[in-house]
Image (cartoon, rainbow, N blue to C red; front, side, top):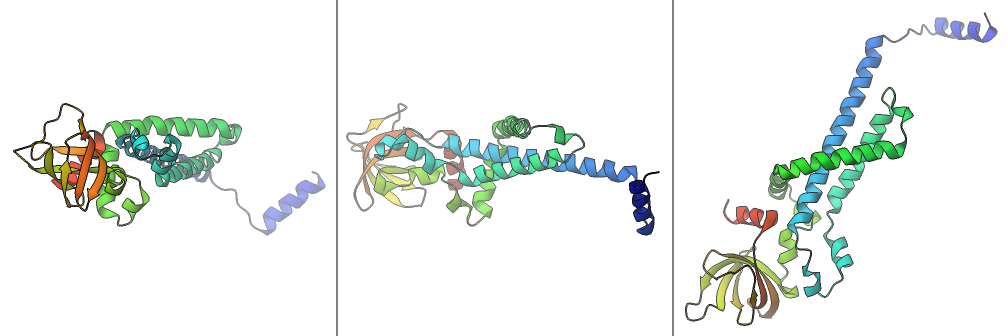
Length: 244
């Protein structure tokens, strides 16, 4: 027996080192895979939230605001959920390389597999309405969450910049190009729509929910240039907030 082997045996004997049982390594490996799976699921939820938030926005209104599409794009990104997605992908990678054969995989392959899996599962969560329900919960239960996300409501509740949304409360019977609108902040507006372009074959009536592009003429007086119907997830959530 070599001198090195004798030294190793002496260290083991002196320190009373005992080999760890097989179940220890199996349990550790299973836990690592469990944490990897949890990271993928959390990353999928983050992606579903990114998908939900971005799809509820109207990406064509940048030209009405006098901004470039690129600037609008960066303003509208849900950075909170993008950060969460990156964190969960990083955690998934860390757990994967610590599995039994994880060291054999390249970092690019692991990240690609994690991202693709998160995209597929996240799309399913979004399609099933999970992300919409989760967004509603966050909006109601987390005090600072609305300030961290650029939502559909924030996009359209900018009357000083020419964007307004809400529900018609009263229509002037003598001339249907004037009506009273209740916005999402429970403020009443007098809408002048004489020269407005109505999209979606709309006819104004109490209870109709609208998105309006135009300009403020005075306090709570808004001149409409284009009027759109509500549509998409953001509109449904707005309706739920107004009629819980």
